[in-house]
Image (cartoon, rainbow, N blue to C red; front, side, top):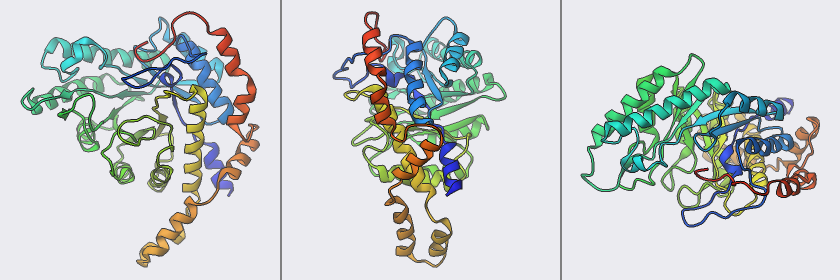
Length: 383
C-alpha cells in the first residue's frame, strides 16, 4: 500500500487556463460571477485547484486567449502562486482567414500566417519555460471535391516539419486528432493513426495526444493508449467526458469505468511517468469553474487509485490460464473498490484537507473573487 500511496502523491494533472473563463456551446455562453479578466487571474484560480488537491501543479495556456506583453513575468507570477506554466496551445481556428483551413489552406499566404503563429508559440515556450506545444487543427472540408485530400496532407506535413525543426532539444509537440467538427466531410487529422503517421515521420519530439472526447461512439480508447505506449508515441491526454460528441464535460462524469480502463493501460504500459502529460480540456458551461476542475482532478485520482489496485500477478495468471471470468473478476474487484478513504488518507498525509471540494467551499475564495472582479472584460472563448 505504501507504493500505491507514493504513486498517488506523485500524480500531476494539468488544468487549462480556458476552463476558468466563461465557456459554453455554440448556442450560448453563460456568464458567471468572479470569472477571471486576464491570464494572471486565471493562474490565481488554477492555483486554488492545486492548493486543495495537491495534484494540479501546472496550467496550460492558449494563445492568443492568454496573450500578454511579458511571458517571463507571467511565468514568474505562476511560480509565486505555487504553480507553473504547462503546455502552450496554439489557436489556428478563430480567424476569418482560416475558413478553408489554416496550415492546409489552399492559399499559401494563409498557410504562412498559420505556421508563423505556431512558431510564435514556440517562442512563448522559450519565454515561459514550457516544454510542450499542443497542436490541434480544425482544418478539413465540408463537401466532396472541395479540395484535394492528399494535397492537404502534404501541406500539413510541411508545416509540422517546420515547427518540429524549430523546437529546442528539450521541447516537443503533441499532435491532437479529432473525428469531426467543425469540418464535416473530411478532417485533416481525424484519428490517432493519422496523427501517429505524421509523428513517426518527424521523429522523437513529435508525439500523439489523446483527447477522450474525440472518438466515434464505441471506440476502444484504451486500445489506442496501449498501442501508442507500445510504440513510444503517447505524449499525453486531454481528459474530459462525452455523452454524444466532443462534450468536454468533467472527466469521469459520463463513463468512470472507461477512465479506469484507460488508467490501467497507462500504468501497465509504463506511461505513468512525467513523459506522459495528464491534462484536462473541459468546458464548464453551467457548473462553477474552480469546483469543476477540482472534481475532475479527484475523479482522475480515483480512477488511478483503482487502476493501481489491480492485482497484476493474479491477473496475469488468469490470463495465461485462459480463465476469462477469473481475469475479468480481478479487474472488476479493483474497479469496485471504494478508494475514497485511501485518497483522503493520502491527502491528510500531505497536509491537505481530505475533502477538497468541501475545503474549497469553506475557503471563501469564491466570495472574494466575486466581490473583487467587477468591471473589465471577463475571459472566455476568444478573449
